[in-house]
Image (cartoon, rainbow, N blue to C red; front, side):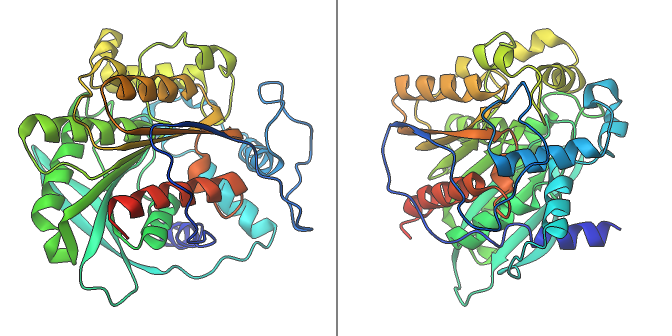
Length: 370
């Protein structure tokens, strides 16, 4: 069953094209929902929910499919039970199948690799473009899931899409998670993986001088922490970091937390559940490794922040972009309207996801002079 799941996820993102957007340094940009005029445009079965009256049709189709599974709320489960529940990726895969959406074959090869870390090993999946290049730029990618759930299979689409569009090796890192491994285990694992990539990039046909970071949600938090620690330790700095709806603050009364408290697939109770499982003591969420807006952000690499409108974490990303700019970091912030948390990996179904991946890829290609 696992092999079937991986094969299905493997084709999910191949519908992304290689277009990039024009660079706008240190700017705030809001992108309106993409209009789909094709006769094959997806249409939801019912009306928009009260928590998202302006949700895009394609996005709502995915949410309707996710809700059709009747899974219990994540916050009502143990971490072990939660990891067994259907995910937004499951819903996208089913929509692709049910709507007969055609996607091309993957343009990357994949290989697994165990990376040594303090107290054990973590697993990574390495995506290498199927081209004749002998030296690729490298993207270290950290998946989401609140440091508690999800894995590199769940986020396979994002990693694959970036590898294909940027023409880079992507090392997708699966870190140890709470509650079995409390804070700061995932943060330490993320940095250990970055150090491993620096030392081993050449052996996988990567250029150790051309490395950037990407992370989604909790993974966006990890990516930024890696940059902070690399700066503090005097290591080779990433050329760029793309933070997709990152966890960046511990204020669960922020505007977007209140406005989208009941959103899907991420809501306010889930964020509290994640914090309890990973940090244990809620007081620890004030740590600047969790609340990046309280960290020393000076000297970080150019940063792209991608945000979703219908997302409790919208305020986190916006505030982080402001703090980065205050610290003198070249920062670009883009808000996509009509979409929810987790949209980035849904390029085969959601037009704004395709656009967001092309935008992120454009930023990364520029960092690599490609």
